[in-house]
Length: 184
Image (cartoon, rainbow, N blue to C red; front, top):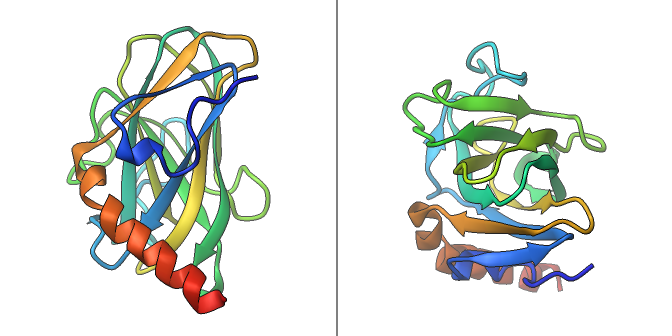
């Protein structure tokens, strides 16, 4: 297996190919991150959440160049409020935070270990997917990783960050540096 990108580098580059491995994206949610009313879990989600009505989020736009089953999962959460409860929503084509049920394929709350999210789904080549990484409850900030795994021995996956995500790179890196410095 060969991974062509290191954690955190993806948001600074436009395209990050991998070969039969995975891409890990560091998500940073701050008080200045955009907010939306997230969906409920489901495939497709049956409605909007009454708990996550104003959650911070980070969109991750990507495409795949082969038909196969992919795993999208959260890990390593360091979130405020003592809860490490993440949430993922997968969209096809486009994501509009003002209309979160439009184009949503699947959303997950706790299919990963503990309160971590995981979506396992067949993805089609050439389709723009947007994976919206967020938290279960309102007002939660912090960091966590999102990994998009490709089956071993398959062609490339390319992840392309949303333009809004690039604006948060500097703030996110500064926040991560501050958190790590405070721990030390």
